[in-house]
Amino acid sequence: MTTQKWKKRMWWIAGSTLVLVVGTGVTLWSLGFWPTTLSQPSMTEQEAIEQAKYLSSMFHKILKKHVNTKGRVNYKTLAQEQTTLDRYLSVLANVSPNSHPKLFSTHQDRLAYWINAYNASVLRAVLQVSPWNNLISYPRKVRFFALLRFLYGGKRYNLYDLENCLIRPRFQEPRVHFALNCASIGCPHLPPEAFTGAKLEAQLNREAKKFVSQSRNVRVDEANKTIHLSSIFQWFRLDFTNWLQAQKKPKQASDRILDFINLYRPKNQQIPLQGYKVAYIPYDWNLNQQ
Image 1 (cartoon, one colour):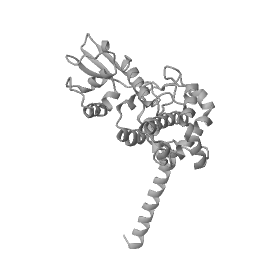
Image 2 (tube, helix red, strand yellow):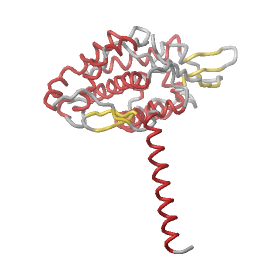
Image 3 (cartoon, rainbow, N blue to C red):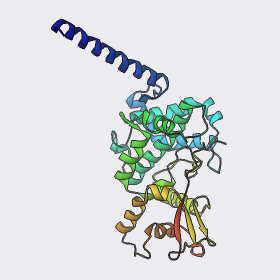
Image 4 (cartoon, helix red, strand yellow):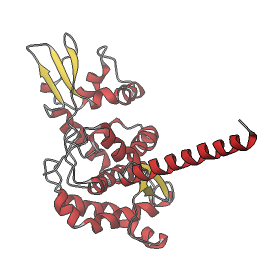
């Protein structure tokens, strides 16, 4: 092959590769499988700082109106008032404990901010990718948790990174797994109120007790000597057991996850620690809609 023909062949290969890459990108973008930062209403930083004083109350009103006592969300009415949710997310986009630490002076204030931020972003993500009624398929999970991105204090996060790269490692608080809601029935119930720094300890304890008391999450099968647990205890097992070790709780059995669960169950409903095997309940990825 002559040098001229070789150059033409290389240019043809390069051109074809470019067309393939661009075409694939356009296809992925058109199908929604491309990283997307959701836009929010424009707001100056000063406006956001002023609004940040009322962050919890802003989100509280949204939850009170669209979430029932069983943790189910009325996404239809929420969609009709999406501007209210977007206004709240716009404040988050400008202000966070990272960008404005003086506005969140306590550990509880900071954690409450991130729990509410996650739950609000999940609500917005549902509206973004609807209509759908479950997160069962892997491509849909990828789009929902990885490809949709949100701004918090000027920094972008997808839902996966917000939970696993910020909230979990920074706070090392296992009870967040009873407070973070991923829009699925298998999740802990979304409470119809916002988390606040002042009430956070009581709120996390309440949600932990509620979660481990529900038979859908913790169930003892006496006949088969089996303890059935939510998959959350399997996925995040180390979050619970490492916390126990850090608290220097006495080791009562080889399966320390049961020790953690018993901390939040009544004395007359303690999980047996010996003579039972543990099985994990398949996660219900259907949408938590009313």
